[in-house]
Length: 344
Image (tube, rainbow, N blue to C red):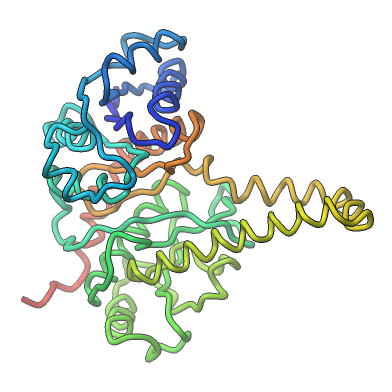
């Protein structure tokens, strides 16, 4: 049975959604056991309201946790017994196989970096996320692609980008079942000479790696089109792109709501397009994707959205289970073995 450690205290809605998500998983056939790390009294009270398999849910008590508005490093230094560090420590000690958290992204990544080893050959870990695309991907026709890094780093060198490409390709194969994910670097042009020095150098390295299905550079307009399965970039740029995509989605939604309220003809048109709008909402619903992986650690780490509900937490747990079953760390390790050695 696979065991997942959950930082129960982080979500915007509090521990109730994590407890409910863990309870849901315990009632399913999948062999998953969860450890809820947080305020034991509150978690136990919440569990009493749920139907769950008592043999598959455990509580580890701690009264400290990191709030969203706190500086992660300061908070972790001040509270070594906080839920993020305790949950990461359970994974480091082998008492759990993977870590899931829905609180502060910085706290989760920093706690993981303090407790977990990196995969050999990984200098910087990367926060990856899925984004909706026009084209579908893989045998399951997934309407999204993977992008990394989207916030764990600021600046990177060419070898870091190569590592991101290997990790993103491995994750895409494992989660989306794409045999040979198309991997591309995000740049300001498709030519091999376009981009920063790091992008140009990474392009040359990846082009010579037969283990990666590298298709070259893509531009920003290719991201929503979904012309590739994995988009690789540094964290600063990736975070800007991610926030822009989220902002565009919210603006389109607001415009549609305003149009529906103001104009009869627009309202009629939106009603006629209701099925298409429903499909778009389904495609862009981040709750079904189960969270964003933090790639590069020896054990799987999944960052669920702060606004997660119980269903989203349940999906994050299931994604974590799949990364364990299919040996994400080993797949990344094997991929990096074919990469040129980093210059000292």
